[in-house]
Length: 625
Image 1 (cartoon, one colour):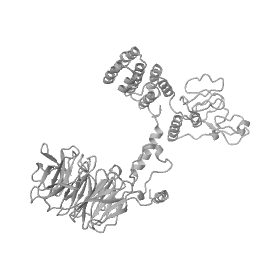
Image 2 (tube, rainbow, N blue to C red; image 1 turned 90 degrees about the horizontal axis):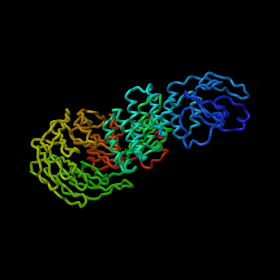
Image 3 (cartoon, helix red, strand yellow; image 1 turned 180 degrees about the horizontal axis):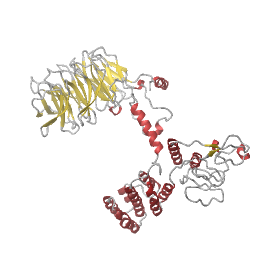
């Protein structure tokens, strides 16, 4: 640090010492509350912050620099009280230093801790000396050093000094227990079984704390060798790694004014990055928690151009209204159902993200208004509109029809959902049919009198959610034949979908739009604005990384996208010329989405083509805060 006199130069050699910032400080005693020793030779560095120098700190201190953490040394003013004036020749003027605010002192301590972790101990000493701050309490420093050196008796004595600084009286007992546990394990690893037994009986047990853990510790006496002990105790073994981990646990019981929590600056920076990511409307990628993967010099912001707002491809193979679209669970295929009586399976190119026609499944006389992929993506079930009494179960790999199911010509089978085991599915419609069937279409169970609008199987494999004509969603258990009310709306629920974790339900409500419900708390969380919803059946979806986004079609020919936490849309996608019936977000490719419309087309949405860094920077600079 040239400004602090840490670097050498001819000008410095010609000038006499000028206080704490000068290059030729005398050998000041380290005033941590204890007399320093061994400094008479003037060539030893005494760290006033008390931290042992790291192996990679490198070099000695010029002129035998020792540090007093801002406590004035004998015979001269302390650095907290005065600083050097400008100019040379001995005409320096002393000025009053501005008193640091609490936040300034905190920042200096955080920086000091981080620099110490990097092994820059001389820099830490200069920082603490010039600022008049103290990195940590002297008793905490002694305690740290004794723990890291494995001097357990001294560390126990240090706890007595720290007792007055700890808020909770129970904390000292817990800290002592952790110390003795480490001591016990190290004795065992060294083969000192008698000493370990002495610690267990005469030191740990009398604490009368965590007796269950003591029983577990006693079982380690039976370990035949060190590797067995480390494996059973899930312990790193004697040495720096386990002691550092122990120190991290011990620090949680000490106030930050006494000893800073471990890696505090890194944790604060990580929290700041995560908060910026959470507030970023268009963040749609997994963010590495490692700080090395981001720049701390600029705020995190994602460009709209990286978001699936742009038409990448228009699929025109259907020759009538397209009522439904759904990506497979593995994201490699898209199925689209149309009024033209066909289901088309599209293959997603993993590199270019372009879709090409793979198979056409024909013969759905009433058209296809709903599609469900089996959990393993091997099968696909297709349903028709209200007057359709049949459903088709296709083998996706071969393109063959495995089952064409119809219980009665009076049935209406308009919705379907797979059981998580992939061996059963439920189906139903508005005429009061509600069936559970196997892959061959055999009826396993039925529920009478339920006019089903939409279905979903929960991950427990037992509960089936069904929206009905009473403007509600109820849970039905086919095993014990119980049902319960979960969601009650004031208008018809045209369709709904469930988040991957089973916690949230996304409803398309007639004349109201898109509603988000918490199924666990059974409360309406949010009503999303902008979408036009009448009495057409429109299917919305969760999507994007971590399902942070919601998308829905609309009767005004647009696709709307919201961030899950915001009621106002963050994007309105135009291109379709008639009602958009369904949207599906690729579950494996967060930047890909599909929409199906009455205009007979399927649009594939993705990021803007040819996005370069300059475009992103320009958009970021133009974004409102």
